[in-house]
Structure formats: C-alpha cells, structure tokens
Length: 410
Image (cartoon, rainbow, N blue to C red; front, side, top):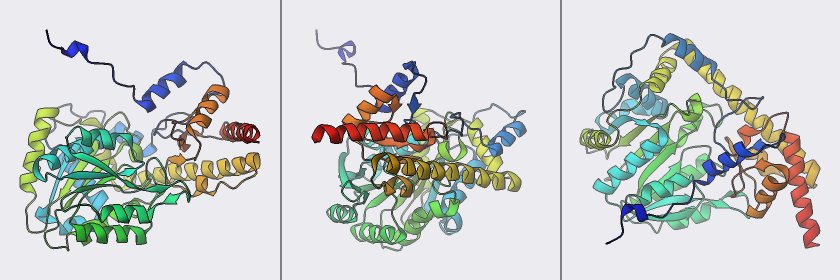
C-alpha cells in the first residue's frame, strides 16, 4: 500500500511562535521577551489604543451579520484613501480593492492572483525579509529569488545589490517591497533610493507588491510612511504598458488589532485596462477560501477613520507608540555603548518596532540560556518589549555576552 497522508513528517515549528512558547514556559523572574511584533506599553502589557477603545464603546450594539465577499464598502474606501492619499481619486477604474484577513491574507491573495493571471517567471523578495513572504510565494509554485537588501558590513541598505539584481529581472517578474519600517532590519530606503528603484522597475516592466504593515506606526507620520506607495503608483503608471502594482495593507500594528485580522488588498491595473475584472477574480478566490472577512475589527477601523475626533486621537496614539519606541532605542544604545565601549548607532537610527542588532546566532542562544533574554536567532529584536524596567538589564546581558566572546578569542 502506498504512502498515505498519515505518513507526512512533522514540519519544523515556526521560529517566532516556538520561541514565544519557550518564553512562556520559562519560570525565571527576570525573563524578557523581545520576540513578537506587537506593541507593549511601559509596563510590558498589551495597549488598547484610546481611539480604538472609544470606537469599541460606540459599536456595542453593532450587528454580527456577514460582510460582503469583498468586505465593508466603507472600510475599503477609507483604507484606500489612507494608503493612496490624493492619488486614489486619480486612479478611478484602475484600482480594485477588497478587505482581507489582515496582511498575511492580502499577501497570499496577491500571490495566488498573480500566479494565475500575470504568470511571472520569478518573484524577488528582499534578503532578509518577513519569513512568510517566501512561504506564501513558494506555495504558488513561482520561483522565489532574492535581492540583497541589507549589508551587514555597513549596517545599511545594499543599494548596489538591489539595483544590480533587479536589472537582471524579466518583464512581468514580481518584486516584493516593504513600504516602511522594514522587517526585520528596521532600515528604510530614502526618497532618493526609492526613486532609483522605481526607475529600474519601470524600465524593466516589473510588477510591484508593496507590503504595508506599519503605516503611521513607523514614524508617527501616516502620509510620510505611505510616500513610497504613492510615488510608485503615480510614476509607474506613466510607463506605457507597465503591468501594474498592488498593496497588501495591514491594520494590526497601527491600530493594535492583532487578533482581529484587519487588512486590505489594493490592485492597480495598467492605465489602459479596467481593474474590475481583477476585482471579480479576487472575490472568486476569497469565496473559495474564507467567503467573508471578519466584521468587528474592520468596523473599529472605519469608526476611527470616519470620525474626525477619533481620527485625531488615533494620530496621537500613533505618536505615543512611535515616540516610546524611539526613546527605548535611545536608551538601549546608551546602555550598550556604556557596557561595551563601542558605538551602536544603528540601534537608534533604525525605524519601527524591530532592530537588527548584529548579534550572531550563538550570542542570541547565550542571551536566552544565561540571561533569559529572548530574541530571534537572526538577531532581530522587537524594541516594543523594552521598557524602563528592563532596558538596562538587556544592555548588560548583551555586554556580558560580547565581553565573554572577546575574552575567548583573546
């Protein structure tokens, strides 16, 4: 008898979620979790944004009926305007938008749709990037290639590597770009660098998938964090026969709605084509996968964005989160420089919730085993897990690990 599905080997555990389980099981009183991409307040607790709290109070008598397959029209309209700004009104029939099950679903739907209808030879993902980018695209059967995004030597963007790789791509190949607060490095492109990449992508006729998971959360500036998306949308469509672009949009981070799974996918078609057929095809895919997106989280978002007072409060909430993260970066840098006697500028200059520390896999293991400080083996640290009560402890722990390494080498 041939192999059956019961013979399937157990796949490796997801690195981040497996590490969080290890942290939960650790009884040490001074343990610190710098793993999850979720904001925490000064006390290390989940923070419900005041704007979200008020919106939830207004929704107490809300309905629990199904949404449409494409989601809430009000939510979709507000999400579209948030990411595209004034550019949205100029897209007209060239824009198809649907509500999704957060950013993961938006990325997945984009991959499935493009694999069926664009049929690229390859998709280019940043190295490094969010781990799910590779998994999502590999599931479609499209060849996954990488472009070097980050240089460990300079602790900055590898601009030459990006441009050299993309110039070798073929027309209709797909390029994944993170709109802001790059995960895991925290290193973002400048406007000049974005413009250079847009020029190459336009000339090579490459299809762009923007992953926008941190709009407003990255810097506190909603419009500034969307600059790249808006620039590409306006400029790529100026190229004759350019295949288009799409944006996978998440509201997990910037609204603190991690478990509500709120997102959207926006597909911008070439200027000579209507996007309405693409919208219908996306709805067909959705119908076979989950039928309807969740209602409650989207209702919270549309309540906040649709009310002037709540929207103003939301922007203050974004500033609260981004300001605290910047302060933790500053204090961690100061502590590391005191403990190690060397400069750590990248810890402070990186953007968003993650810091690419430069620690090796072995050093990360020692931090966990000896000091009960948990971060990903890549050296990615979630700065959200730092607070006044643990930032100096973390700095001392890193300093001790690095000092021991130096002593062993000497």
